[in-house]
Image (cartoon, rainbow, N blue to C red; front, side, top):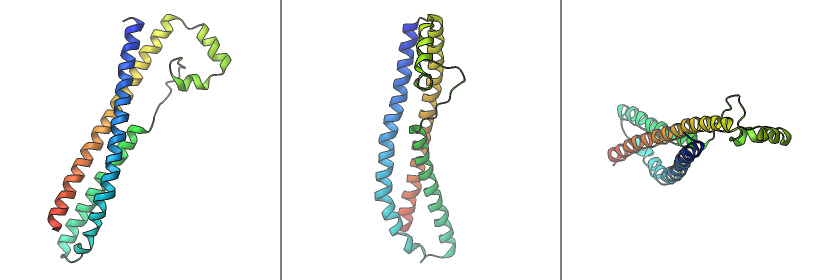
Length: 164
């Protein structure tokens, strides 16, 4: 595959990364709004919980704990999508901003002057691989966030139905 095709592939993968970041930003905002409005009602029902018998209190405590853990884990997974976790594999790349930023200007100029087409292709291939693994982690965390939130929401709905 020539360098132009590799660059095109890298840009497509980087678009997938941006897409995950944009979707999770909207999702995280939704989670915040949801928690602000719904959790107020959630805690309004807590006093009536103490009017129930002990077996019901234990069941409701487990239900409430499950809801809070699931929604909290959903928020955590959303944060994992946004938070950058970029590692250096040991070799400095002229395509990765983190490596370039750590070089002195003199070192960067020297490496750039001696940068062959073969080195460029290797860097492109490496960046495609690294970007792909970043994209898959982001999308998996986003998916996990949605799943945990939906399960938590279903349990919250069950909680409201029981309490009414």
